Length: 448
Image 1: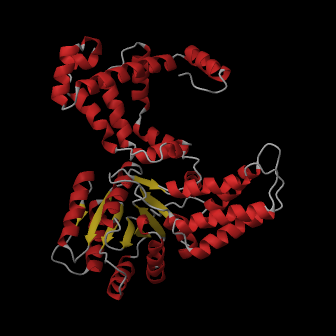
Image 2 (image 1 turned 90 degrees about the horizontal axis):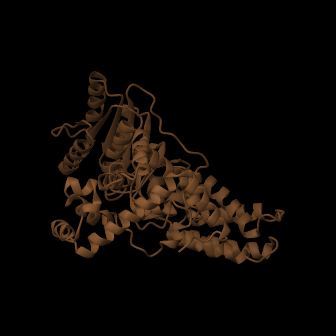
């Protein structure tokens, strides 16, 4: 996500490298590259022009402190303007009402039905709510089936009336049902079309008028770039939605929609979809997204995801086992499962400052853990708890049972042993302090 844009921004700021001060000439040269980068990312032309004008206005006349370079100052100003461009502050979803009613809108193929499920799962697991999903696509039986499959997957009930062809009536009946059964939030999934048309707009407007939702969300595929912004504008003019959901931000997206949609429709981005899994949903934070666009990573989101998956008791248990040198393959396997729940691997790597640039062009596959899991699953309980007993004949059996090679088993055994030694070392505060002193003594270079 945003790899190309980050690279182009980086190149733009290098124009100022070596300059002692910010001048109109070097700022103009830098911002020419910034504007080109934004346009290449499919950002609205007017938005890109206004953005660079604001950055220029703030940059000229700034006194560059001796502690920072002109390039660093430009990055700081650009970061602030990017954050404001994408909404400034995080915008929360409105969950008032009994039940709260959320109306989903968008074109066919935008990921609306899948996101309805993700949102229901988010509200159930993170907000401790009892959601009801409502199938209001009366044109495609497969859409109703899809929502039922999603609901079953996340353990959320789905309300549907297969014979009823009036979506506004289905939605109203669903809200009455929710009140009777104690659901405190209703998510209404509506029909999409391949393009904006009058029938579609009339239908979604009638549904909104009938159920008076507490929140209307417009779901858009971020990979469609400027088209996404134009579609959002058309929907907003008709139904006046409350917020935007950007899906498929884990894909090969140029990022134009994320950057310019707020300035065009004046509605905040509230959520982003970052993968196919039901847990792949994030609240949109403009400041964190600005960090990522400028190649600074997103450590806060990474820590939050880790905290969600790693409970305190488990962390204490693992720490004790590491200190006693009892960390085994069962523990290792559990750690892998928790890491996988954190989300798309490429997305996670991009949250680590500097890693996105280092890993450019490297294919980070979510299936990378599969051979490791297969090898561990081919071990006996005794082998998992005491890896030292795994001799060559056992390794050959494990390789055969896991569909891997002897070399792969040997590689995992070595990696596991190295990991265990490093974890043991790092669990001891005295050792850690010594390691940090050595690290500083080498001028910050890691020992090879």
